[in-house]
Image (cartoon, rainbow, N blue to C red):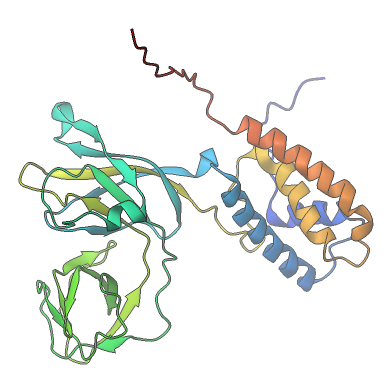
Length: 305
């Protein structure tokens, strides 16, 4: 007898749901059973995001900083930023310099948020990334692709600082005077600057973003390099595997079984047992899915002689 020489075992959505139903003492029989299981699985993925760092969802990104610009959008599926540096130079002259993360309360007390210099602090503003369902206002005058001020019919419903969508372009602005948006930076979030005509709808959007201080100066160029924790991908339509490593499949199936047991007519009979199994599988998975580099703690002590 020889081994299979294959290490590709995985479960697609259908198999995961069938296994979870069977652990609940039930069977997957209808389209509604699949829909409710997909919904529970997506909620389980959000629970995992709240439990802490999932190593397979860490991604690196970078933003080219522009002199005078305070806010920069980050991907809308970002859970949080783990680490970040300010990069100067390129190739062999590249240097990564620490930039400290500060809280909203600390950022709000900075006396001059438009100060220029090498960025040394960043506030991560964790917004939803969801635009308003209807336009806040309209353009009272057309704008070119390079305009840095934007006149709107009414700015009353717009935040004093933030992001707007006009057509397919995202724009950030840093001040409002009357009905004029000032210090506008065009083509944000990977969009393209364009001409927009009078009466074009203007919609505010709550993009997750970073706010750097100082805003940059002639000593650059500066690049904000970050490592982010992204959301896990949705459950899908049944023809794809899940956005998790194979080693977390036991925890995934066990967690889904708990979710389903709370909804099935006879599921409560097994709920306590399934919950204990899930807790055990999650502990095994989370203990394995961690950084294994050594860490050293050095106490800070002072002595008076």
